[in-house]
Image (cartoon, rainbow, N blue to C red; front, side):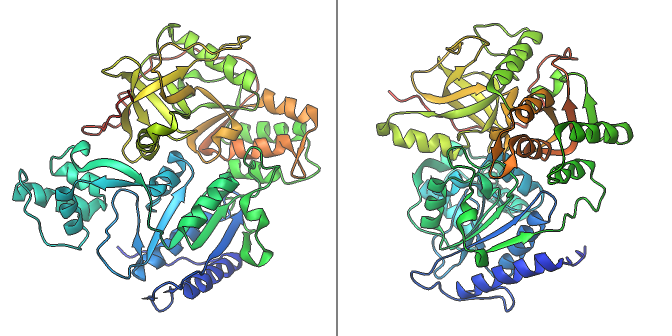
Length: 507
């Protein structure tokens, strides 16, 4: 099949040329498809900014394909060959599992920042298979694996370019070939960072330690990281290192959600005017819905987006109530949000294991049921490449007008979770869902308060982030009401993977 060539707009072409120049100085020539060793001590950061629909992802994908054609090795986070001298590398990263999975669905092999910060340690016998699959070794002779099993692994890798998947196709368990995780010791070459508006200064410094050449893709209209005074890491770059994409392509395809998003840039637009626009579009286009209630069926997989924490807690309480969830346990299928890892410093290896498996702060998780030990949970990490994990868990269920959350069960230490049927708009950054419900009464309160963030009314930033989380359908909820569920919570829609790794609780 012949792929049609991509035609860039003027702003995209300018950005592409600027990145090409930076890469050529770094020893990667996209025009001639030649690679030379990197120069010692040389570093470069370039930012590509633009609002939703401006073509940032298209540009990222084309740069990735050009680098792959030039012979740059793509580092995915699941296995990294160490035997080929002089290799040049590229890693495509996102701050969240969900953001990385959105890129992978578009053919871009993205992974999370944590999966690059932490690298898997392979059993030496099975590392021989990985080297053979990647073209850096001879076909191995491994005890217990037949030629047919190796052929299955090779066939899988050819189709999917996943070492863990190939080894699983050979009949191996994850715990057979991955013995642990370690902090990355060797630097890489080039890093593409999507959703870079979410990066805080510490993460940015960590990435600069690993990548001499960084390309940041970000949306300046998003909400800045908490405690950074409304600024984003690319705001402090020299103007000569920033390239803004002004044209909005997805509006060309008559996308009503993006029409609403970009209407927020009008300084004269008031909240009542914006709601009038939503209502007008909803009358003629079913991709935008004027919602008189929160649809509870959607909350299990797509949280309601709110501004105020009190609203979040009330909606979670209502969600659990309509499903008949008891106070002393979770139901299989309840959504959770990872709120961090509670482990002392001496258990650093356990922390690496958890974070490398996708249990990072803000990760969306579905509860599958209790684990084999008290305090353990079986979990599905939404958007993770290997989504099912068993981990020591501390689950906190917050309730209205109560200072302390209710904890139905907990390990002494491990991953901590809040309920995920509703989340704040700040925490929703970096994620997308097919259908998104936005709780408009909260944004009305923000508008009435008149708060300004980075020179723009806060309600507009909140609205922009919230509605651009919707891939296909937006529900603008205007009443504090909740529908009844049409069925019980379920987990059969979640893809299972063979033999998930488990994390033992530290003793």
